[in-house]
Image 1 (cartoon, chains in turn red, orange):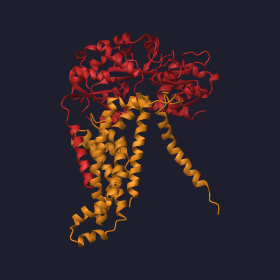
Image 2 (tube, each protein chain N blue to C red; image 1 turned 60 degrees about the horizontal axis):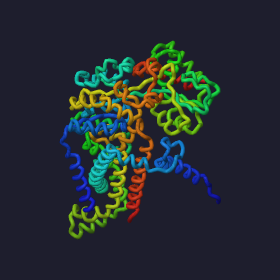
Image 3 (spheres, one colour; image 1 turned 45 degrees about the horizontal axis):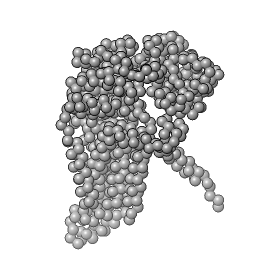
Image 4 (cartoon, chains in turn cyan, blue; image 1 turned 90 degrees about the vertical axis):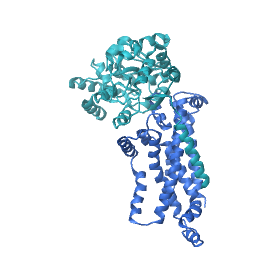
Amino acid sequence: MKRISTLSFVLLLVALFFVSCSKQKELHVYTWADYMSADVITEFEKNENCRVILDFFDSNEALYAKVKAGATGYDLYICSSYMVSIMKNQNMLQDLDKSRIANIANVDKGYLKLALDPDMNHSVPYMISFAGIAYNKEKIKNFVPSWTMFERSDLKGRMTLLNDVRETIGAALKVNGYSYNSLNDAELKKARDTVMRWKKNIAKFDVDEAKRGLEAGEFFLIHNYNGDALQLIDQNDKIAFAVPREGTSITCDDLVIPATAVNTDLAYRFINHLLAPEVSAKNMEFINYLAPNTAAQKLMPEDFMNNPAVRPSKDIMKKSDVLKDLGENNIKYSKIWDEIKSGE
Amino acid sequence: MRRSRFPLYTVMGLVLFLYIPLVIVMANSFNLSRYGGQWGGFTLKWYSKLFSDRTIWYAFRNSLIIAFSSTATSMVLGTTAAIALYRFKTRFQNLHRLFIHLPLVMPDILVGISLLLFFVALKVKLGLFTIFLAHVTFCISYVAMVVLGRLQDFNYAVIEAAMDLGASWFTAVRRVMIPMLAPGIMAGGLLAFTLSIDDFVITFFVSGPGSATLPLYIYSMIRHGSPMVINALTGIFLVFTFSVVILSKKLLEEK
């Protein structure tokens, strides 16, 4: 027992030593894991003589629950646009002083037209991702980049749609020419009928199994996200990805400074650093997502920029929507979703 | 009489159901194919990628600090709690017993969010210290339960003998009872250690800036990170947790 207590005492001392040995300025970033190149961080630390400490959440909702309950100490969040608008409405974010971010001029103006915060009053876009169709080139004849592929009865049982209310109903809204964020009952009804028609042809509504199924050859065409598709293509060269010409849903992760930030100055500098063309390019290379940063995009190799799984074409971009949080109106979608799931 | 084979099949089915996924994850961590859909050849690439990531090491360091410190503390507190429960039978001890049992049955998310609100209300800075406190609260219970189990076979006459020979109650506990309970205390400690190092829900809520632990990192990686690195990490953790559990079992069996 004596040995045990001596051992644990020594360990406690070691622990305390570790905890108490930092004196530099610190920037605390709350973000997704593996979402930024390590080089980018080291470079910033060297330039500013500070330490960047990353903390992680696993979903936007978890982040919200935690900071809403009063957790503080973070200087920067990187989270999805819809969550940014929720937090903005609750006065949890600072308004940005754009004059302190010189590189803000690099942000893609085309994307900003779609963004939920087009003037960047409280958020700066970091990376975008979007939904589309991944398919097996060998198995599908006459592929058309369109949501209407789900009407094809010759692919019956070989297709899947995302098991996600907003994505799937949204795709049906889009094919009918409406917005992903539509609240119009007539439009929603039409979208419901479309999904009901698709449902007859698909094997199931699914997210993860579908990817494995596509790779293994069980499914020929799946509705999924570009990031997943990239990994699938990397793995299996028979797989290709296309963004439907009608338009798609775009999700953007934004950089925001919380109202409770301690080291605001450093947070501004970090945002500015992330928007620098070379830095942004390095991050794109690392995550394989597209940063809405015009100057950085010019630095990327052509095959990266022309890859449909990285960047939708300008025309499609224009027709696409950034998913909004619908608040109380979410119930409209979940009601239709229930009808779809239980209907014949 | 012929015995029914049914229990055997049920047990086999259950074992398969519980352990096959773990085996698959382990096997996949050596799989060259990035998605794990098919076997692409043997590789240690994911392990090397895992070992070269500085954030993972930082998180791992945090996890170890928390696990060791909260285990040590809860071993002391849990053992004293168990001895108190064994020695005294009053109405207060019934309440005490309830307090020991509560953390075992309370949903993690409730514990997590209420601790967070509590810390925020007291203006305690969130960080390693708050994670440590939270882990101690649930680790105490596990240590106390294991030590209590060991106390059930404890022969109180030994203490009485020690006291007859002139030892005070405190000396008797320190020199006789605790050495005899040591395997139980260690086993409880190891159990607490595995629980502390695995915990996600409570840790997520009470962690502060700069105190991300390994489980927090892993969960967050699921969205953008490479699933294969997660497999490798899971592999290491499995080996680690299993050896700790086996060790704790060995200690408990010792008479």
